Length: 312
Image (cartoon, rainbow, N blue to C red; front, side, top):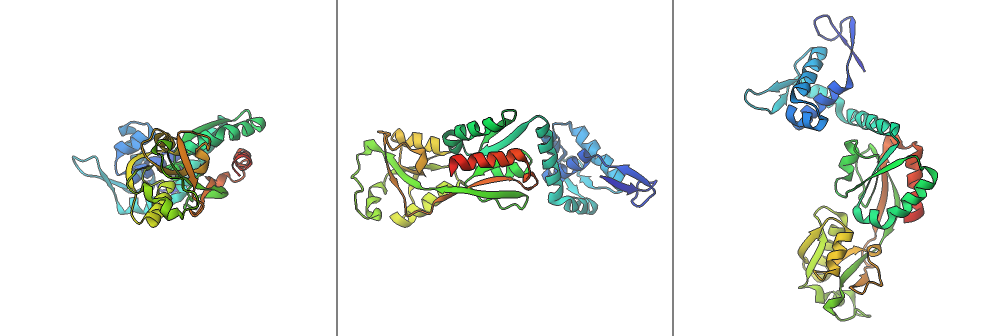
């Protein structure tokens, strides 16, 4: 990337200066976080280095971009700084993400985000399929849920499997399939069998029982709460929340409450729990996501095929 600068630093002169992309990256982070300290921590450089990057960019740009208040580490953008930051926009995020992926490709690493329970239940099989065709590639898994979209936009992930539909145009998603949710409760509660009773009536014994669910923001939690509120006429009493299906199921097995979890996360032969598949609840969709510019990457394509083989 290059910009025309004049002899006195202004734009439009005869001399061309090359702009190091690290200068733009530092300025972008300072503008986004509001401080040199936060930007330096994220880039793993010193405070002074971050300040020097911005000062060098200002020399090349020919105008002040950042104003620092005396005695404060917070900074503000000048009108020229706001204009430059706005012009960089999402394009710089995409460029930085692409550079990060390309650097990782040199080291043969594919970074994949996936919720913990999906990883535990399905990814040993997916990994075995992937290994048969690409044994030279390291798959680095990040077991997350609510942060996957942000991690992809920050350049921390190359691909993700999620129950969420991501909204950012720089991310491409393809639906893998769907699954049913199930109501699960401790066998030790010795509740009446649901039998052929209407589901609303069958749910009444749970009205005063503790509810175990996912942390706030997770898609399964909201789907379950909406359904039970509609069916029971009031919101369930949330006693405990956990990060994923494996943790929620373990708490139910321990007798600490009932919950709504993916059907596949519970062994029907498990003597510690009872399960009722909720056919009335809309199935949860499962998506495969990757950054848009990796659409032609052969390892992304291979991982998608392996996911479809095991998950569909």
